[in-house]
Length: 258
Image 1 (cartoon, rainbow, N blue to C red):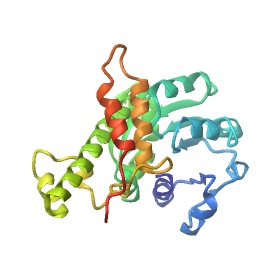
Image 2 (cartoon, rainbow, N blue to C red):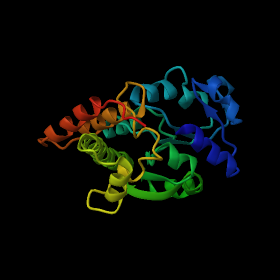
Image 3 (cartoon, helix red, strand yellow):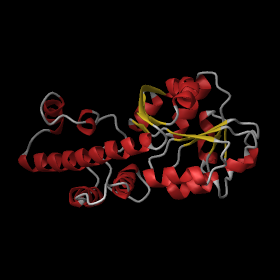
């Protein structure tokens, strides 16, 4: 996701650069990406964090990247990863007080990032989001202001809980359809115009992970992490049995033939 987002910012004229431990295999796309945090401009004022989970976020901000302290003129941190809302709120006590924080998790998968039509769920002070509006507009099409800091992440994990549920059920339906002898394409066309319509089914041929099985390091694996993030922020006394069942179903997914 980060590569296409960086490309969108560069194409829009922003003086943007990227840091990624996998930078060497990304350099053939012509983007300004380095795997050495010390090579980033020290005068950067805005940092977008687009990594997999809270451990990677810690590493980027406070660990081997240490970008929070390395960028001496940093004014704003934008958290774009899907993380536990509790973890995100806890960043406020860990990030220097003079640095503003906005949570801006996004939705749409890699295809939406490439086509500059991401959906952002924004949490933070209105003035801070107003100032960042041009960046979000360069990368996305749908900007949803959800409330104060943390509200964007809370909305995102709930959205992804639904996405995980529809992913698990869509894949189950397609497997059952195979056994019934139904044509996949015809069934997906039906679903797209009927009561079973959902994001995964409607974008099945475009979403890069639609046919993947579960693996620790792929996007299907990320869905189980996202359900865990939603569970971490579940209301006290909430019935979590259905989300946990969805999480187990996602973890059991096998690759679907192409």
